[in-house]
Length: 379
Image 1 (tube, rainbow, N blue to C red):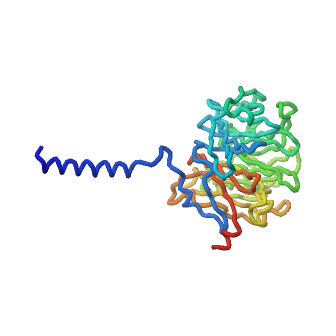
Image 2: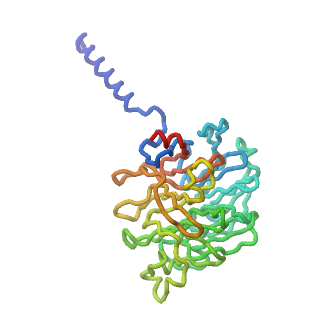
Image 3: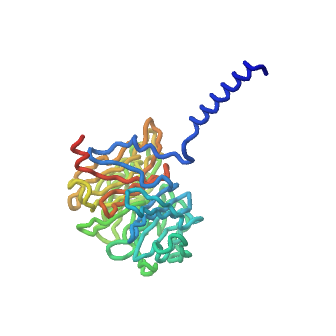
Protein backbone atom coordinates (compact mmCIF):
# COMPACT_ATOMS: atom_id res chain seq x y z
CA UNK A 1 0.00 0.00 0.00
CA UNK A 2 1.51 3.35 -1.06
CA UNK A 3 1.22 6.60 0.91
CA UNK A 4 -1.82 7.83 -1.07
CA UNK A 5 -3.66 4.52 -0.63
CA UNK A 6 -2.81 4.53 3.07
CA UNK A 7 -4.25 8.03 3.49
CA UNK A 8 -7.45 7.03 1.63
CA UNK A 9 -7.79 3.87 3.74
CA UNK A 10 -7.33 5.88 6.95
CA UNK A 11 -9.91 8.45 5.81
CA UNK A 12 -12.49 5.75 5.00
CA UNK A 13 -11.78 3.94 8.28
CA UNK A 14 -12.22 7.14 10.28
CA UNK A 15 -15.48 7.84 8.47
CA UNK A 16 -16.76 4.36 9.18
CA UNK A 17 -15.90 4.70 12.86
CA UNK A 18 -17.69 8.05 13.07
CA UNK A 19 -20.81 6.63 11.41
CA UNK A 20 -20.75 3.65 13.75
CA UNK A 21 -20.42 5.94 16.75
CA UNK A 22 -23.37 8.03 15.59
CA UNK A 23 -25.46 4.91 15.05
CA UNK A 24 -24.69 3.46 18.49
CA UNK A 25 -27.14 4.49 21.22
CA UNK A 26 -25.74 6.50 24.09
CA UNK A 27 -26.98 3.92 26.57
CA UNK A 28 -27.96 0.28 26.44
CA UNK A 29 -31.61 1.08 27.03
CA UNK A 30 -33.16 3.85 24.96
CA UNK A 31 -35.40 6.30 26.78
CA UNK A 32 -39.08 6.29 25.79
CA UNK A 33 -39.88 9.12 23.34
CA UNK A 34 -42.21 10.97 25.70
CA UNK A 35 -41.92 14.12 23.59
CA UNK A 36 -44.46 12.43 21.29
CA UNK A 37 -47.12 12.39 23.98
CA UNK A 38 -50.01 14.85 23.89
CA UNK A 39 -51.60 16.11 27.11
CA UNK A 40 -54.04 18.93 27.95
CA UNK A 41 -52.67 22.42 28.49
CA UNK A 42 -50.79 22.76 31.78
CA UNK A 43 -49.98 19.06 32.08
CA UNK A 44 -46.48 17.64 31.75
CA UNK A 45 -45.16 14.07 31.40
CA UNK A 46 -41.71 13.09 32.65
CA UNK A 47 -39.93 9.78 33.15
CA UNK A 48 -40.17 8.46 36.70
CA UNK A 49 -38.10 5.41 35.74
CA UNK A 50 -37.13 3.87 32.41
CA UNK A 51 -35.67 0.74 34.00
CA UNK A 52 -38.78 -1.31 34.78
CA UNK A 53 -39.09 -4.01 32.10
CA UNK A 54 -42.69 -5.11 31.47
CA UNK A 55 -44.09 -2.73 34.14
CA UNK A 56 -47.68 -3.58 35.12
CA UNK A 57 -49.66 -2.85 38.33
CA UNK A 58 -48.52 -0.08 40.68
CA UNK A 59 -48.78 0.25 44.46
CA UNK A 60 -47.24 2.62 46.98
CA UNK A 61 -45.85 1.89 50.42
CA UNK A 62 -46.10 3.93 53.61
CA UNK A 63 -42.62 5.37 53.06
CA UNK A 64 -43.26 6.26 49.42
CA UNK A 65 -41.73 3.18 47.79
CA UNK A 66 -43.45 2.46 44.48
CA UNK A 67 -43.91 -1.26 43.85
CA UNK A 68 -44.40 -2.52 40.30
CA UNK A 69 -45.51 -5.94 39.12
CA UNK A 70 -44.76 -7.50 35.75
CA UNK A 71 -46.16 -10.26 33.60
CA UNK A 72 -43.77 -12.10 31.26
CA UNK A 73 -40.75 -10.73 33.10
CA UNK A 74 -41.69 -12.62 36.28
CA UNK A 75 -40.31 -9.88 38.54
CA UNK A 76 -41.51 -7.43 41.17
CA UNK A 77 -39.73 -4.10 41.44
CA UNK A 78 -39.29 -1.46 44.13
CA UNK A 79 -38.72 2.13 42.94
CA UNK A 80 -37.24 4.68 45.35
CA UNK A 81 -37.19 8.45 44.92
CA UNK A 82 -35.25 9.32 48.08
CA UNK A 83 -34.56 12.95 47.14
CA UNK A 84 -38.17 13.46 46.04
CA UNK A 85 -37.24 15.11 42.77
CA UNK A 86 -39.91 13.25 40.82
CA UNK A 87 -37.59 10.58 39.41
CA UNK A 88 -36.72 7.25 40.99
CA UNK A 89 -32.97 7.00 41.38
CA UNK A 90 -33.06 3.36 42.49
CA UNK A 91 -34.83 0.34 41.00
CA UNK A 92 -34.52 -2.92 42.92
CA UNK A 93 -35.80 -6.37 42.02
CA UNK A 94 -37.40 -7.72 45.18
CA UNK A 95 -38.73 -10.95 43.65
CA UNK A 96 -38.08 -12.89 40.45
CA UNK A 97 -38.94 -16.19 38.83
CA UNK A 98 -42.64 -15.79 39.62
CA UNK A 99 -45.50 -16.76 37.32
CA UNK A 100 -47.09 -13.60 35.93
CA UNK A 101 -46.74 -11.48 39.11
CA UNK A 102 -48.89 -8.69 37.67
CA UNK A 103 -50.67 -7.68 40.88
CA UNK A 104 -49.11 -5.79 43.79
CA UNK A 105 -50.98 -4.45 46.81
CA UNK A 106 -49.55 -2.82 49.94
CA UNK A 107 -51.29 -3.42 53.27
CA UNK A 108 -50.14 -2.65 56.82
CA UNK A 109 -46.46 -2.75 55.92
CA UNK A 110 -46.65 -5.90 53.80
CA UNK A 111 -46.54 -6.28 50.03
CA UNK A 112 -48.99 -8.76 48.50
CA UNK A 113 -48.19 -10.18 45.05
CA UNK A 114 -50.41 -12.23 42.75
CA UNK A 115 -48.85 -15.15 40.87
CA UNK A 116 -51.76 -16.82 39.02
CA UNK A 117 -52.80 -19.56 41.47
CA UNK A 118 -50.96 -18.04 44.43
CA UNK A 119 -50.93 -14.85 46.43
CA UNK A 120 -47.67 -14.13 48.23
CA UNK A 121 -46.83 -11.71 51.04
CA UNK A 122 -43.50 -10.01 51.64
CA UNK A 123 -43.62 -8.91 55.26
CA UNK A 124 -42.43 -5.49 56.42
CA UNK A 125 -41.04 -5.00 52.94
CA UNK A 126 -39.95 -1.35 53.08
CA UNK A 127 -37.46 -2.15 55.84
CA UNK A 128 -35.92 -4.95 53.78
CA UNK A 129 -35.62 -3.65 50.22
CA UNK A 130 -31.91 -4.46 50.09
CA UNK A 131 -32.46 -8.00 51.35
CA UNK A 132 -36.10 -8.92 50.67
CA UNK A 133 -37.62 -11.56 52.92
CA UNK A 134 -38.75 -14.94 51.70
CA UNK A 135 -42.26 -14.84 50.28
CA UNK A 136 -45.00 -16.15 52.54
CA UNK A 137 -47.71 -18.04 50.67
CA UNK A 138 -51.08 -16.59 51.69
CA UNK A 139 -53.22 -18.34 49.05
CA UNK A 140 -52.19 -21.36 46.96
CA UNK A 141 -55.42 -22.81 45.53
CA UNK A 142 -56.65 -20.29 42.95
CA UNK A 143 -57.14 -21.56 39.36
CA UNK A 144 -53.91 -22.44 37.57
CA UNK A 145 -54.93 -21.48 33.99
CA UNK A 146 -52.67 -18.83 32.52
CA UNK A 147 -55.37 -17.54 30.12
CA UNK A 148 -56.62 -14.42 31.97
CA UNK A 149 -54.91 -15.92 35.01
CA UNK A 150 -52.81 -12.85 35.77
CA UNK A 151 -54.45 -10.79 38.48
CA UNK A 152 -54.73 -7.15 39.46
CA UNK A 153 -55.25 -7.13 43.26
CA UNK A 154 -56.14 -4.41 45.76
CA UNK A 155 -57.27 -3.91 49.33
CA UNK A 156 -60.65 -2.22 49.69
CA UNK A 157 -61.89 0.29 52.28
CA UNK A 158 -63.18 -2.72 54.25
CA UNK A 159 -59.65 -4.07 54.67
CA UNK A 160 -60.42 -7.05 52.44
CA UNK A 161 -58.20 -8.22 49.59
CA UNK A 162 -60.09 -8.19 46.28
CA UNK A 163 -59.01 -10.71 43.64
CA UNK A 164 -60.44 -11.33 40.13
CA UNK A 165 -60.79 -14.82 38.69
CA UNK A 166 -60.71 -14.26 34.92
CA UNK A 167 -62.45 -16.46 32.36
CA UNK A 168 -59.94 -19.12 31.16
CA UNK A 169 -60.93 -18.52 27.53
CA UNK A 170 -62.06 -15.96 25.01
CA UNK A 171 -65.68 -17.04 25.49
CA UNK A 172 -66.92 -19.95 27.64
CA UNK A 173 -69.23 -20.73 30.55
CA UNK A 174 -67.39 -22.39 33.42
CA UNK A 175 -68.31 -22.45 37.10
CA UNK A 176 -65.93 -20.70 39.44
CA UNK A 177 -64.57 -18.25 36.87
CA UNK A 178 -65.40 -14.78 35.48
CA UNK A 179 -65.89 -13.15 38.86
CA UNK A 180 -64.36 -10.98 41.57
CA UNK A 181 -63.86 -12.38 45.05
CA UNK A 182 -62.68 -10.90 48.32
CA UNK A 183 -60.98 -12.36 51.39
CA UNK A 184 -59.23 -11.44 54.59
CA UNK A 185 -55.56 -10.54 54.40
CA UNK A 186 -54.68 -14.08 55.51
CA UNK A 187 -56.76 -15.62 52.72
CA UNK A 188 -59.67 -16.68 54.91
CA UNK A 189 -63.42 -15.99 54.62
CA UNK A 190 -63.63 -15.78 50.84
CA UNK A 191 -66.76 -14.27 49.34
CA UNK A 192 -68.03 -13.72 45.81
CA UNK A 193 -68.42 -10.02 45.06
CA UNK A 194 -69.45 -9.90 41.39
CA UNK A 195 -70.17 -12.37 38.59
CA UNK A 196 -70.15 -12.15 34.79
CA UNK A 197 -66.77 -10.38 34.75
CA UNK A 198 -64.70 -11.70 31.85
CA UNK A 199 -61.34 -10.18 32.74
CA UNK A 200 -60.82 -7.15 34.95
CA UNK A 201 -57.25 -5.90 35.27
CA UNK A 202 -58.12 -2.74 37.17
CA UNK A 203 -60.50 -1.58 39.88
CA UNK A 204 -60.83 1.10 42.54
CA UNK A 205 -63.31 2.42 45.09
CA UNK A 206 -65.07 5.73 44.53
CA UNK A 207 -64.01 7.94 47.48
CA UNK A 208 -67.45 9.44 48.12
CA UNK A 209 -69.52 6.26 47.94
CA UNK A 210 -66.91 3.54 48.69
CA UNK A 211 -68.43 1.57 45.81
CA UNK A 212 -66.23 -0.65 43.68
CA UNK A 213 -65.74 0.39 40.04
CA UNK A 214 -63.88 -1.84 37.59
CA UNK A 215 -62.85 -2.12 33.97
CA UNK A 216 -63.68 -5.29 32.05
CA UNK A 217 -62.27 -6.49 28.73
CA UNK A 218 -64.88 -7.61 26.21
CA UNK A 219 -64.60 -10.82 24.21
CA UNK A 220 -62.72 -11.07 20.92
CA UNK A 221 -63.59 -12.40 17.45
CA UNK A 222 -66.87 -10.53 16.91
CA UNK A 223 -65.39 -7.98 14.53
CA UNK A 224 -63.83 -4.56 14.89
CA UNK A 225 -66.62 -2.83 16.76
CA UNK A 226 -68.17 -5.40 19.10
CA UNK A 227 -68.25 -5.68 21.98
CA UNK A 228 -67.09 -2.61 23.86
CA UNK A 229 -64.85 -2.87 26.89
CA UNK A 230 -66.74 -1.76 29.99
CA UNK A 231 -66.54 0.50 32.99
CA UNK A 232 -68.73 -1.06 35.69
CA UNK A 233 -69.94 -0.20 39.18
CA UNK A 234 -70.85 -2.74 41.87
CA UNK A 235 -73.92 -1.56 43.77
CA UNK A 236 -74.61 -4.81 45.67
CA UNK A 237 -72.87 -8.08 46.47
CA UNK A 238 -73.41 -10.84 43.95
CA UNK A 239 -74.32 -8.60 41.02
CA UNK A 240 -73.98 -10.20 37.56
CA UNK A 241 -72.47 -8.16 34.70
CA UNK A 242 -73.43 -10.43 31.82
CA UNK A 243 -70.47 -12.50 30.64
CA UNK A 244 -70.68 -14.81 28.71
CA UNK A 245 -74.37 -14.28 27.89
CA UNK A 246 -74.66 -10.55 27.30
CA UNK A 247 -71.94 -8.10 26.28
CA UNK A 248 -71.78 -4.31 26.84
CA UNK A 249 -75.25 -4.44 28.44
CA UNK A 250 -77.20 -4.76 25.20
CA UNK A 251 -75.71 -7.44 22.91
CA UNK A 252 -76.45 -11.12 23.38
CA UNK A 253 -73.60 -13.49 22.60
CA UNK A 254 -74.28 -15.41 19.36
CA UNK A 255 -73.61 -18.72 21.12
CA UNK A 256 -74.09 -18.32 24.87
CA UNK A 257 -76.81 -15.68 24.65
CA UNK A 258 -79.48 -17.98 23.28
CA UNK A 259 -82.56 -17.90 25.52
CA UNK A 260 -81.10 -15.07 27.62
CA UNK A 261 -82.19 -11.46 28.15
CA UNK A 262 -79.71 -8.60 28.62
CA UNK A 263 -82.22 -6.97 30.99
CA UNK A 264 -81.33 -9.67 33.54
CA UNK A 265 -77.78 -8.34 33.91
CA UNK A 266 -76.20 -5.10 35.09
CA UNK A 267 -75.18 -2.88 32.16
CA UNK A 268 -71.91 -0.94 32.18
CA UNK A 269 -71.75 2.60 33.49
CA UNK A 270 -69.84 3.44 30.31
CA UNK A 271 -68.93 1.65 27.08
CA UNK A 272 -65.23 2.30 26.52
CA UNK A 273 -64.91 1.15 22.92
CA UNK A 274 -64.20 -2.21 21.32
CA UNK A 275 -60.87 -3.90 22.03
CA UNK A 276 -59.26 -0.87 23.71
CA UNK A 277 -58.08 -3.20 26.54
CA UNK A 278 -59.02 -0.93 29.43
CA UNK A 279 -56.86 -1.95 32.39
CA UNK A 280 -55.84 0.19 35.38
CA UNK A 281 -58.32 2.63 36.91
CA UNK A 282 -57.92 4.99 39.88
CA UNK A 283 -60.10 7.79 41.14
CA UNK A 284 -58.16 11.02 41.28
CA UNK A 285 -58.16 12.29 44.87
CA UNK A 286 -55.02 14.42 44.73
CA UNK A 287 -54.79 18.22 44.93
CA UNK A 288 -52.40 18.99 42.06
CA UNK A 289 -54.74 18.62 39.06
CA UNK A 290 -57.47 21.18 38.28
CA UNK A 291 -60.83 20.99 40.07
CA UNK A 292 -62.45 19.36 37.03
CA UNK A 293 -60.34 16.25 37.67
CA UNK A 294 -61.33 15.85 41.31
CA UNK A 295 -63.20 12.57 41.71
CA UNK A 296 -62.63 11.62 38.07
CA UNK A 297 -61.67 8.07 37.15
CA UNK A 298 -58.35 7.87 35.30
CA UNK A 299 -58.23 4.80 33.03
CA UNK A 300 -55.28 3.24 31.17
CA UNK A 301 -56.17 1.73 27.79
CA UNK A 302 -53.51 -0.83 26.93
CA UNK A 303 -54.52 -1.04 23.27
CA UNK A 304 -56.13 -3.48 20.86
CA UNK A 305 -54.80 -6.54 19.10
CA UNK A 306 -58.02 -8.06 17.66
CA UNK A 307 -58.88 -5.15 15.38
CA UNK A 308 -58.05 -4.21 11.78
CA UNK A 309 -57.36 -0.64 12.87
CA UNK A 310 -55.87 -0.26 16.34
CA UNK A 311 -57.70 1.42 19.19
CA UNK A 312 -56.76 2.40 22.73
CA UNK A 313 -53.08 3.06 23.53
CA UNK A 314 -53.89 6.08 25.69
CA UNK A 315 -54.82 7.25 29.19
CA UNK A 316 -58.35 8.59 29.59
CA UNK A 317 -60.35 10.66 32.08
CA UNK A 318 -63.92 9.64 32.95
CA UNK A 319 -65.62 12.59 34.63
CA UNK A 320 -67.96 11.19 37.25
CA UNK A 321 -70.91 12.75 39.08
CA UNK A 322 -72.32 10.35 41.65
CA UNK A 323 -73.11 7.14 39.81
CA UNK A 324 -73.00 8.66 36.32
CA UNK A 325 -70.19 9.36 33.86
CA UNK A 326 -70.58 12.81 32.30
CA UNK A 327 -67.69 12.65 29.86
CA UNK A 328 -64.76 10.59 28.63
CA UNK A 329 -61.74 12.38 27.23
CA UNK A 330 -58.03 11.96 26.64
CA UNK A 331 -55.44 12.72 29.30
CA UNK A 332 -52.42 11.21 27.50
CA UNK A 333 -52.29 10.24 23.83
CA UNK A 334 -49.47 9.61 21.38
CA UNK A 335 -48.27 6.12 22.33
CA UNK A 336 -49.02 5.06 18.75
CA UNK A 337 -48.55 6.50 15.26
CA UNK A 338 -49.27 4.99 11.85
CA UNK A 339 -50.62 1.83 13.48
CA UNK A 340 -47.36 1.22 15.33
CA UNK A 341 -47.07 1.63 19.09
CA UNK A 342 -43.97 2.41 21.09
CA UNK A 343 -45.76 2.29 24.44
CA UNK A 344 -48.79 0.64 26.07
CA UNK A 345 -50.13 2.15 29.31
CA UNK A 346 -51.17 -0.42 31.93
CA UNK A 347 -51.88 1.13 35.32
CA UNK A 348 -52.18 4.51 36.99
CA UNK A 349 -51.47 5.58 40.56
CA UNK A 350 -52.14 8.86 42.37
CA UNK A 351 -49.11 9.90 44.42
CA UNK A 352 -49.21 11.76 47.77
CA UNK A 353 -48.17 15.02 46.09
CA UNK A 354 -51.02 14.72 43.58
CA UNK A 355 -48.88 13.64 40.63
CA UNK A 356 -50.04 10.63 38.61
CA UNK A 357 -47.82 7.68 37.78
CA UNK A 358 -48.47 5.61 34.64
CA UNK A 359 -46.86 2.23 33.96
CA UNK A 360 -45.97 1.13 30.42
CA UNK A 361 -45.13 -2.53 29.84
CA UNK A 362 -44.02 -2.10 26.23
CA UNK A 363 -41.48 0.63 26.95
CA UNK A 364 -40.59 -0.83 30.36
CA UNK A 365 -41.13 2.49 32.07
CA UNK A 366 -43.14 4.45 34.61
CA UNK A 367 -44.12 8.04 33.78
CA UNK A 368 -44.99 10.92 36.09
CA UNK A 369 -47.79 13.31 35.10
CA UNK A 370 -47.91 16.72 36.76
CA UNK A 371 -49.92 19.90 36.35
CA UNK A 372 -48.90 23.54 36.68
CA UNK A 373 -51.33 26.44 36.54
CA UNK A 374 -48.42 28.65 35.52
CA UNK A 375 -47.66 26.30 32.65
CA UNK A 376 -51.28 26.51 31.55
CA UNK A 377 -51.17 30.33 31.58
CA UNK A 378 -47.99 30.39 29.49
CA UNK A 379 -49.78 28.44 26.77
